[in-house]
Image (tube, rainbow, N blue to C red; front, side):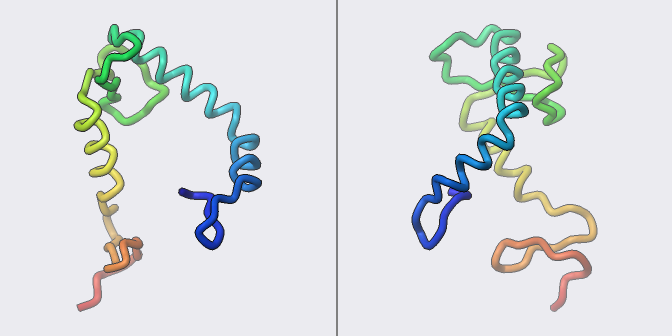
Length: 102
């Protein structure tokens, strides 16, 4: 969990973050619901609405596709693992800028 202090959930920080980001979170949720509706995914359908260009606010029919939950989550996971040009991943998982030392 992102809001942890000494192994305990920090509800105060979590609430502050929610208040600060509420407007964008509401827009994002509405956008996700609109994408599901456009693809004809009903409530309870296990499939996800995936955005081909990874822009969740772009709900053009040509940008949307139905994916299994597993495939969509793998896509997200792979995206996080990708290392940008000019960076390398340290053994602890953090990104470092510059050439990899041997």
